[in-house]
Length: 426
Image (tube, rainbow, N blue to C red):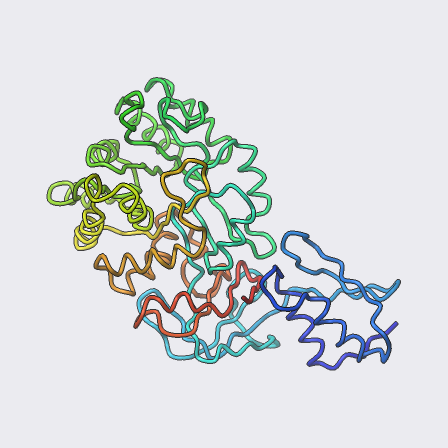
């Protein structure tokens, strides 16, 4: 059976089926495609859609009784009339080529998509979140977050299952610390316990064998928890560095920041509510070439929950300002989670846009805020294949209307998202 499709109809089918569908589009893919095929064969449409992935709804084939027509294929796409954020400014309207899962060099023969003067950003990176279900990767993608740095996921079998889905069929890509190093802390798995400094090398080796992309340590304890020995944290960090792994320290208090600094971690996540990072500590962090993931979204939520007598969000905001003014890299992270009994649970995806707004409120320019969610986390986590829009990089892209350099809230006006070249339209 031959289908005599007009070129425009063929392009329409290709566009529909290259876009993963979920509950948000107004019409399922097969209801959009069947009228086109019906016109092509001048008959009723007894067709079926064979979906490649039930969770994303990405369609692979269209069938008419016995014959099978493969209509989903990798296509070169030219995004025309888009203003690219190059990490420092918006460029004049131009063309970006998507060739498979990469930014391409040549637009010859490409399917054309008009960006209508919109701003094309690198896919956003959430530098601190907690992923426990595939649906959370979908939510991340829906808000233009194309990479997420998970800061604790257990058991290892769950992380393995998530890795099988992450980055596939248009879902957000995932990197993870796996289990964090701690010492009998309430709510944390026994697998994270590091009893002595002598245990640290084997503990780190076990996490690496499980696939941890970096190593996280808890640099403080709740008042009710046993006190962790800073020597153990030092040993965990040193062991991780010996195996070529970056280290991230959870520290929400002033003493925790000192422990993290003394251990020479690469990154500190969270900022205190009980005091301000200033003076000598800022100088120490700067001289140690560390970066900070302040998670202002989480700190704001905690301050509201705890009340002004025990927590002051202004401390967190001023700490970020002090760190930024000292040219310490600030990365955007939300601490999004659905963890039972968590002190607060920022939503996946949406809150990264709120984090950008809070960073601007804390003193970052809109350009620096955009860098905090694109090129800087890519660089600091060693993800050299993303974070910028240039040939050879991953085709992780976010098209928005409006100008986020003029108003950071424009990142919310999402028009289209691409994850490794797979397109999604809200």
